[in-house]
Image (cartoon, rainbow over all chains, first blue to last red; front, top):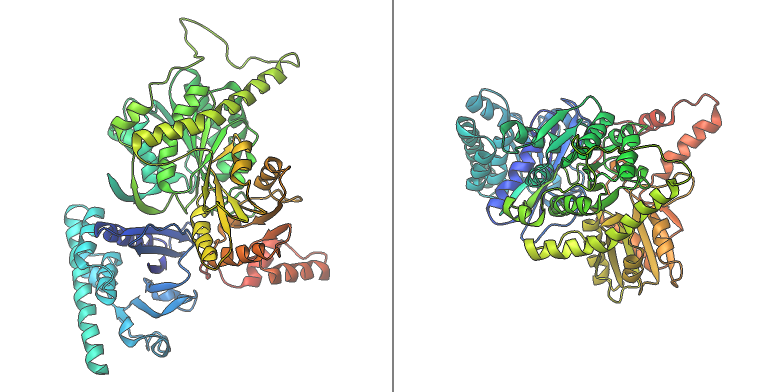
Length: 195
Length: 417
């Protein structure tokens, strides 16, 4: 089982992102489960969503306590919420930002996790370019696919088109593709630097 | 066809396939997505003929359902928590009048303190109202139970409440098969009311009944629920034949053969409990679990039978009777009163507190060592309790406890689970 936790704020599409990821996994023939944990029902409140993917039926209903991957959609949560609680040693971190981990005060993550499992991606900016609005969830899922290889970009694209009809779907697919390329390139640079 | 969809969406589509003629509801989290989706289908004409009545409150929602049902229409509504309490007088009326309304209850805690998250306090608050109460373990079962609920309600002229855990199920995306229109049509015949307000054949419904007959009216309601004890498994078997999967029934045992310790629970937590049972089985503990699908009527014989081999029974409940303890536990104790086994109550998951597999594993291990107290509150933070008790001792005007505790915790929504 691969377990993902997404942190963001109400109105940013945190819940939608987990749902789309579950649809993507389902489209690849896997079992998937997505559900939210609302902090409170208002724009801007901290929201967490979860997605599990497995080759077997998923029965558990607990929140994702031991995560294989954590996606941070809103960096203003960094010093408010215990974002990385329960992240497994082999786990992945994806942060939506144009800054670096060091600039965010998260440099100590490098000592705890594999360097090439940690990536920042300016998903909001990439979404802004494609959509005209900084709605980052499709872009973040493209970045997630590149970082973890747990899901294909094709499956993400299928699920994004399933969620957003017509031109909006295509623009979100373009944002996902741009983020996928960004992270693929970033990962290549990390590996080149560590080799 | 298997689809990856939200539980609320699945329930809405299934309800639409049951062809309700009147839907009346007032939005409240976490029920909202269900009723929004049904409303959209009525507006789009995909659910037709059906009148969607926007009402001004939950009291009106149930009152409209009562009127519509008495006029011979298949009627549906949905609510949660405070909404259910607000309609409670009409909830009792619907049952007392024997009107086969189907209602989804997206289970949520009751305030104060205000809390939008899941537990079973709302369902327990109307336990004695005369409604049949069925609990879904998964979204597939939640969808399927609605088809069975309309059939059961109309056969017996008793309202049926389908309980599904708020957020945990209503807002969860998972793969499931929405019952197809043609299959539902074959399973659920058109509504043939036992009583109907018809100007061509006038009757009164809801007349005053004095001491000379009230007890008999109530006893008849009890008999109808006992009839349901036979009909629920029969309908589940028929459903399985028609739809090719198991859903519903009275109880659902899992790995109870040779089990010394058996957990009893309602609703979606059964999934996590099954995972915990597998872990403890691998560790050598002889444990199993029994899910109770039909909470009202309470299947005493089926529960006794399912628990007959156990030395220890552990009832895990998402509600409790303040000042006493377990609610479901009391029913289970009645069902097993002549059995040679211990019974422990574990209150868990109140107001959305996560029930984790790890906590359940520890609980099962403690139960197997006979170390469980009669009443346990799972993952209760004793430090918080002690500090608030100390504040209350230190000063008379210690202020509101809930707010004191939040201040004590320091951060809002910062914890996972």
